[in-house]
Image (cartoon, rainbow, N blue to C red; front, side):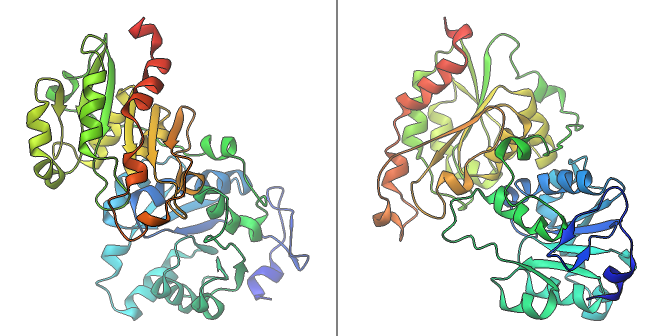
Length: 364
């Protein structure tokens, strides 16, 4: 047993027994390490809120990439962002010294990263939690959690939270417990030319056709059909994406230039978060943008392939107004291609029906 854990006494915030071996100490500074992509990070943010409820005085540090900093920094439960991209240019000795100076009590390796797990051990962080499904965690972590993901029917956010078991977390958190712990605050001011596009009388809906290769896509032909089904007098339509994605779908944007507002490449991630918060609905495949919308509580329709492990049971949007569409069929033939006929077979009529049902007061 680490000396740190054997000597600290519990306070009122931390009285649970860890594996019947010792009492959980009053942790003051915890690092959450999730150094992968946007959607993964968003589904990890509730961990920060739940840790704040387990340890009321705790300071939460979140280790992530430059790209995900805007969404991490927008979480009111996160006290400090640590940029892995900045650390990666330092030598091992410099990184070890940096982590040692953080004076953290605990690090949770939500995304397994061999280099980070090594640095955390060498820096002497007393409690190092990771999944037992990575061999290097047996060397670098001193609390292992059996949280296998490949065959699990739990949601990604629930699987993340299993790593809180050594700290007194629940075996499984319900979706409603996760949703209330996103803690995303919107504080980015939008330019006047962007704000002026938002309608005060119509349903403002965002279509996000591309996924930067992170998901199977619904297809531009389906988005085109959906646009034609949404009455112009009731729906104000936006298309979002990166600048590169905008160029890739230029023909689509030109075809619908009279109906859609093209925002591809025009918003930073901070601005996109703020813009989504001001809109009413979003339609997208399994992307980070979909998870942002769900976390912000706007009406979100996710489009999914029925294929493990990318199926909605694992990666569906979690939010007060989040839902998804997926066909009840086998999808094994699509595994070796990104052109998934199963997701493209979702009917635009079904997406439109969801939107009409949610915003029926406008369309009546």
